[in-house]
Image (cartoon, rainbow, N blue to C red; front, side, top):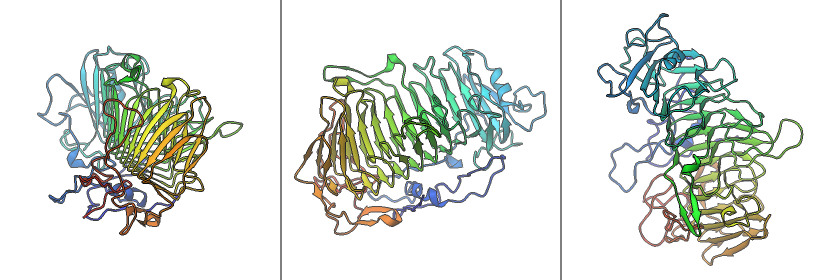
Length: 555
């Protein structure tokens, strides 16, 4: 895959990704350099120049810089009230008791001392732990909370933490179970580890998930899972809970069968599902947030695997991630369908999913949805994304459930201010769904532009206005092309061959958009206006005219 750096004027590269370490299997830090395939994430680097101009701070993708890493009270004198602290150092003498002065040598030994109802913090020094940690059994009551914190400098009495310079490697001895696996907990946080070699990198089992909080932060999760195993989901992360936060992780080179090779977040407990009565959708408070991660080169392979990069089955907001090079393929041998949802898939009836300001490139799901797939009658809002160079029917695919004839079996998606360029076979592919698209740039996406097919009695319908379109609609969908579309008009992107998808001077897409938007599905929180900020979090002008695509014009 060809990688093109995209760097915005005025954005400083130094704060971002120079601290990423790749391929460190032996626990020794390698040289930290910004690799070419990380440079697109540098476009998301925080602008800490102190400027008071109109640009908002730009979030970063990848591991958290050392200065921003929490210590969770592990430092001397820092213990937080109500928490039990256990200390672990792989280089410690045998016979430790888990104190700061006599830490456990094994992380699993520390875990096994946790009692029901405790709020335990496990502070872990740099080093390598070759073991499975946790248990597939429900050891605890639902009131137990565990926090795992890695990256402390050995010999510093847990005063200095930098999980990149002082890596804590958790390496499973085999792929029978996850490297880290936990069951019935009220809350679990995993922060600052390198995790490899298990059936999953981290597995938070689905039982008793109602009310659970899961935080996965600042980890490098790599080379977990088994390619081609039928019911295997979540090679890197397999998570469930009411509140799930996955942020600032590097998730790469994981494998699975059924889907979610990088990140798989299962459905919320039935008591926390969205419900619909008539035309009114009641949205539960259950929410997964996947933000500021790099998710790349994960592989799902079996019969029609769903989601190679990220798979979510609960209400979710997926934003400011680099999602690149993930691949969904058919079986290694014998019959079977190719993958769907190469970069992202959302798949559960009536969940609401916002996909905002992600860079989604070079993913493969040749059956459908090379970049993004809104599936199984989910309700999607897709805004400010750069979706480029993906392979599959439709860079963005929206599908219902079953025949799509029942009210709750229809898929819905509102697409606004996305740049969808250079994908292999169409910008949008819809089946049994309703789609509304405004202010997008759809250009150079193969021979077809807007594709549809049907399996039920209710035809698909799509309304497009204020978009750049190479051609128009193909297939049975009811396609309404508004009078403000720019059909066949070259958007004059600055330098797409070099990865710069901003609008150039004289582009017909400048000021060609609309501020008011009609969503595909009306409910509380539905998008009714153009996003106020662009892909880089730069504030869009407040007038009626809006630039098309993910990037607003900079002064």
